Image (cartoon, rainbow, N blue to C red; front, side):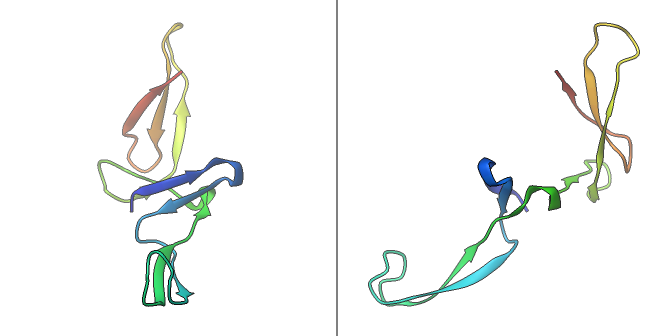
Length: 89
């Protein structure tokens, strides 16, 4: 899923469709005036989130490749296929 919200001070993220829980609310709640159960997404630790490899469409770890020529930028590369994601710094 896509990351909906980042909570920097707790190092957590909210991912769409992941870690959904039911919150039971009484009548008069702004999101459920009649009361009942609200399905909400709870945060998960950022370390449990992986990038999707653009070539294989599967979760992958990443690594940083140092430049061979002085003056070039470092590159973020996927471990699964070696696809280049972006230049860093």
